[in-house]
Length: 278
Ligand code: ZN
Image: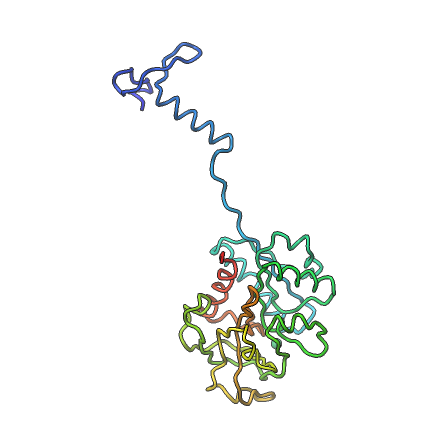
């Protein structure tokens, strides 16, 4: 409390007794406590701001052009999402950055359009996931065949290998398997997802008891495609292997993927779900 013109209020009017400064001037006790409190704050007693979780995206620009197009749109999308979601976001084409030192403080890895090719990078990723790391993979990250030569990763994805796709890329109606899951909670039960090349896998990842499918290609789309056609069957599109903190999303081919606001929100909600403490 201060009187007119900054003059300390004399003792007896503010209920606190005066204290003597070194110069002998009177300083009310209340002010002394306040000043001491401020001093303590300056010395580091203030609460520390929680560091933002670190999200690291990997992608390639030397593969199929439609996959590069997606990655080049995904990078600014997730950079903006980082501002809204209070995480830090870095994106790189340097797959050698997939190493134990760099992953030590990483909370979430994104693979936008590729997978690591070297044994060292693959081993760094496996170790990261097995100690509780998080991963979100898109489209071509789920392309596995006999040339992939990484059985652990095929199992991590759910156990299926790529077995076909539609061509050309087409929009498709997707249906929500689990409206209670935070990743799909804000989606309509069925919605038209923008043009994409939709993959199928054999065996179907849904047959894996650890896999929880979140979005499925609605049967009303089938047959889907012209030059190449998905004729029939159950086609999971987004799922998680509950043995890990991971989500795979088949979207990621071409430059239309971010055209649907509801789907965009799902991408963002997936990041937040993977970052959330559990
Ligand atoms: Zn593709």
